[in-house]
Length: 304
Image 1: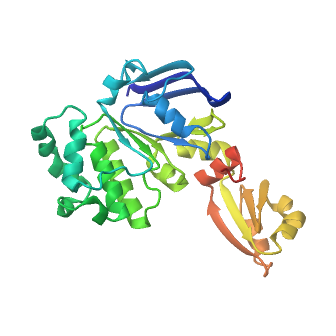
Image 2 (image 1 turned 45 degrees about the vertical axis):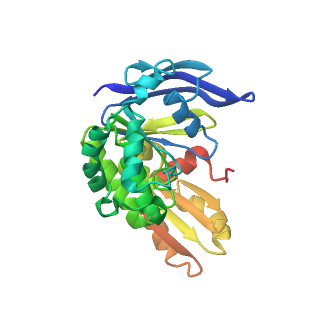
Image 3 (image 1 turned 135 degrees about the horizontal axis):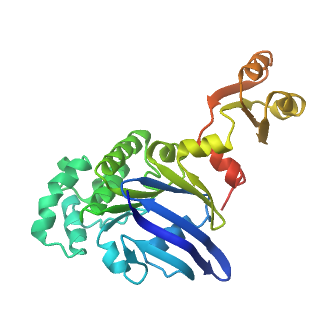
């Protein structure tokens, strides 16, 4: 495996505020790399820097062996982008959207038309090839946006929250398609607020906050390094009072959020046995997951 995206000491400020602060990244060919962080963490700015759409204030960037932003236009010929919000042309059909987009890469109509049947099949849109965009469901539009990003057969696909707003069925279909792309050797750079999505898809990921990279590694590595293996969530109007009396006795660490208490433990059985005697409380016992890591590293407070 070789590095296809490389950032060293990447920096970007707006109005005197550092939005990206000394970021270092190495993303390898054929992996799905996740970029996680709360709102305002610097994820979107990082993507724009990596694509050469804005210039950094400092640091070095490489995209597919090209210096960015100096040679960004050349590098982007081998890149596909799935934006956070669909920007399909509503006046065109499904096929016409793919045809027009391919022309931006200097492809001939014959080259694009040769790829369209495969792209439509990949997106499960063959039956909709002549449909206008406004007649498509949200999931269909998202799949068309993914197919459009593949029209130039890119080596790297940037995906900015690709499944936001989709129902579970559409989300799982997108996940299946993204796994197929990495199996083909494509490199994916994914931003998402769905921790399950990151845990299922990403080979490695980085957690950002306030423009800085906090930690990176595989989902399993981050969970094992940061969180006790078992979590017991305790719910109820009296959960805070219960936590004040009992949580420290049973849990290695606990957090209170509203009417919920999150107990992080090595062995959950003593706590679960105790909670069986607390009729006014409800609880959920589960293994630790990536969302626990995310909240521990970035906090539980709301971000606007």
